[in-house]
Image (cartoon, rainbow, N blue to C red; front, side, top):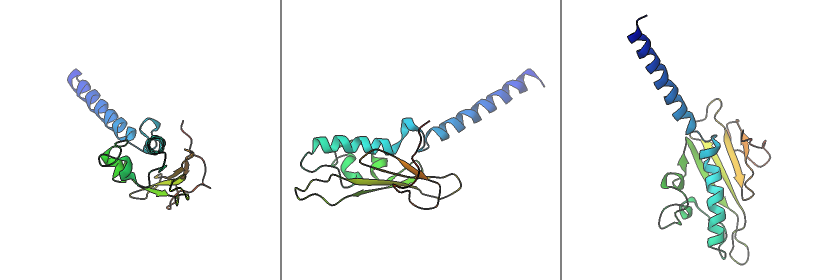
Length: 144
């Protein structure tokens, strides 16, 4: 093999490795870019900013204006990283304050190894690979 062909082959392998890394780094199971953590963190800030209201009742309230601009517009739309996010706020207390919520992330297209996630105001995350929404009784999600 000539030096030129070796160089071209090395560049092709490098480009493929970079493409795989970029694709994998955008997955929901990458802790540094975890939409569940992002939303849970935004909920904490929102509740501190709105002590009379408590947690947000919809992702749009956490998103860009007229929301509080705590999450980006893509996540506020309820779709990111190949998952659909559903935020369910509990009924407000008598004072009108929302003190509990659940958040579920399901793959937009179910397939082998495409997990669903569940979290709530505790920030504890649960995971399942079954073709259903994850729930509080599913195994804890590990961030290795």
